[in-house]
Image (cartoon, rainbow, N blue to C red; front, side):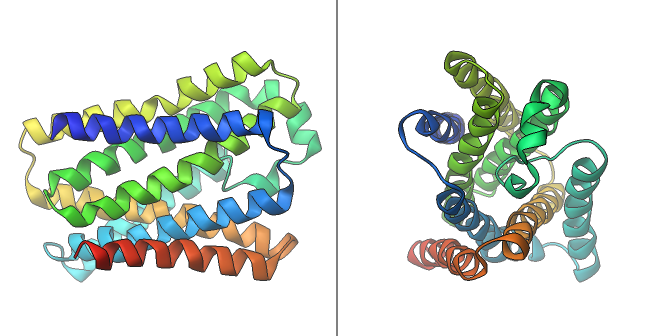
Length: 249
């Protein structure tokens, strides 16, 4: 199980690197990025709706579940509002030309926030496997889907700031490596035999973060750009996770 968790986290890292690398070989316009972001947002929302929340609700009361989900949402909200955006892909509409030019000034805060986001992704992968439930594959698929546009958006931001391609890949790998760190933390929780109640609280907390990322990703795009495209892509990602959930149920 340990090797499987690490392998899944490694694949998530590779997905982000592929996203970053695609900026060098594929001409990516805002419409294509919008599709990828909305699709991955739907996947995150599906993982929260079909796996994380239902699994957590089996041991948590309605109040405990609500508070746990809300806490995850609020943590991401506070970090994004008062520190830095936790996800470049989800915040693509906020990264205008002026922001790109000032990338060197926001480099540390952005990377710290993104590292925190990736850390929780790794914990989510591990927490799913802690449940020893095949349904947790939808969590991994959602994270894997989201990592590609995340790496792409981060690389696009750095590319626009004039950073060398080799450094772009290195920086992306560095920050996304915290996904592996998160999975190791999750493995530690497994070895310490943390009570299942706390594991469920953690999963509900992560679900709240996923919901924040999904909502934040599509609202800006819907208000400013392609409403129909955003909704259709969001539903596609959502239904993809539903299909996987039903397939392995």
